[in-house]
Image (tube, rainbow, N blue to C red; front, side, top):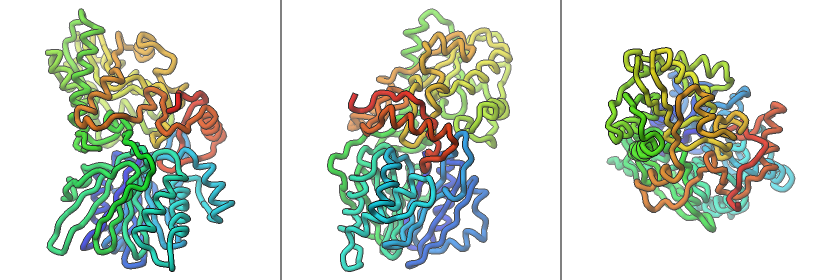
Length: 508
């Protein structure tokens, strides 16, 4: 999971891109990069770290031009990252092209071989984003006529990318002297939205991972990029689009609504905030059904993502809602921090309990999801240390039992708490008196309430069904092997941390 931005404006875009990256910082805290275009010249700066640490005034002054793209990268788990793999990536043939990517390709190894043996192109890092860039560059070269690029050639090149690449990818790219290109994989797994700002000098366009970037930068949300669609905005600000995939279908990653996206974003026409409210309502029904005789004194969220769900759950149960944990906002997300010891230490630094809300009470704690269980175990213990009589732990998401291969750095199945355990065993593992999980059907319904046109989702971390249909046990074993040997793979997701046993693929 990463955050991407692309903008074509009537004035300098460096500040727009910087501000947009700040808004999307939650999507990646490992590295940040900006590339702007001034005529045929690219200006790029990227490095490891948060946006505020990577860019200084002198860096921003050098990022001149009215067109640009930006990227924030999701940190890896367990392995060191490299500034060489910070994005955007650049190639100079057949045109100057820079690209930033959110997602993960599942056929990277085959593409690397094809690029080297057939396309005669060199890939310098282990990033699938660089592979994707070179595939795009080759397809542009194959479709250009008389050394001149036109819209038809650009869209034909994206069609070629769709034919060759598998997995999840939302992409922004710049072609020197021509314009900004954005496209989304044929399954529409990772989000991408287009916004417009009308100025006295003409229309400006912004493409971003989440609509919140449009809101804060003063752009009006136009629409989401459709699965398989490509959007091209030329240097003058003219926008054109075309469907470039043979059989596109919308299957958004459902974990975006659970955890990844900001609540003030709208993804594929669905409000993330409203979805989380609906998740709380469905979870309340599940609590009533499983614990009909339990007298719950208070509902307390685990800040911040679970707040809307916990609030709606409390309302439906008729139980007081209270803030029981105070969050230190200067500590990064524990879910994406490498190493169990570091993660355990971080929980105590990140959250502190308000004892009066726990003492002598039966407490229902609500979190967005339970992944490894490390954070949950620490939080339950904090509640008990604060005097809670009983601790019930509710997850607004279903049990996470399978690895994700589409750009989210999920742990191995051996590390996933829910794998091979019943709810009672999970409760015992985290020290709770009971655990209540959301049903997957209810989670899907919560999202569909915002957009009934969405018929299918990528729910692979919950059900083990990989929507692209090409994820096999052998593929997962290969990635697990590569990780154990200390090698690096992948762009945004980098170390996928997958297990040796695959879930079912899309073909059953």
